[in-house]
Length: 159
Image 1 (cartoon, rainbow, N blue to C red):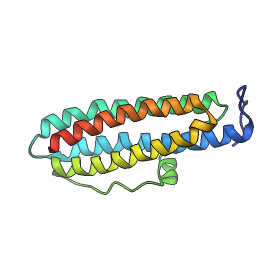
Image 2 (cartoon, rainbow, N blue to C red; image 1 turned 180 degrees about the vertical axis):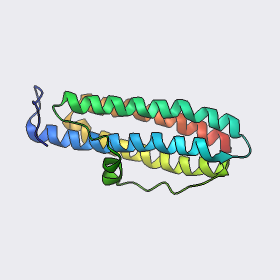
Image 3 (cartoon, rainbow, N blue to C red; image 1 turned 135 degrees about the horizontal axis):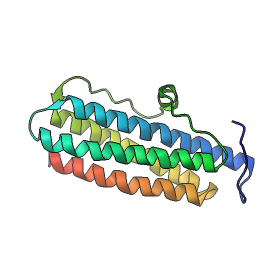
């Protein structure tokens, strides 16, 4: 990717690495929003309405995270790939395989597993970003705090 500019204190190589890490996180943030909506539409059974209503604000949260990540990429002189193909092309994490009308607990268990991987991937990104760009690292750290809170909510439903 050709950069529009390079920010003070960063060089082109570091900027390219930071953008690549952020693009990976952007793709998973977008995918998470889609998966949450998929679960929202297709779950049934015990605690349906509580979980159904709990998912929409998290969809919004994931989309806000994606927007923040995409804007950081732009601030670094790059461009964000928000296309569906990019989500699939960047996927280095486990695919979410629950489909169809399923019990709320089935979707919650699958979302918990997904979120555990999502958080793990964000933590890996933080470790890489810490030495490259503390600003970008802090953005992803804030995202992890939000993701862990929602993971706690989902786990509490199955306790």
